[in-house]
Image 1 (cartoon, rainbow, N blue to C red):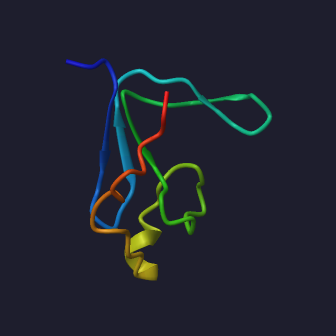
Image 2: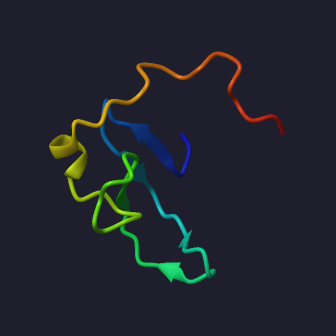
Length: 73
């Protein structure tokens, strides 16, 4: 079982479970917990964390991953 799990919620945030190090654009470490919820809609007032705004703005995510979109190693 992986140490870190990322769950994509339908029309919602990324839910990250496990110990992570989250850095801002300046390289500063942001405080996280064993369960960190990250904004995916871009409308949160607490970015990069989710504040539930996705439900107020009607965020609609792609239903599934785009075939062939996986990153190459």
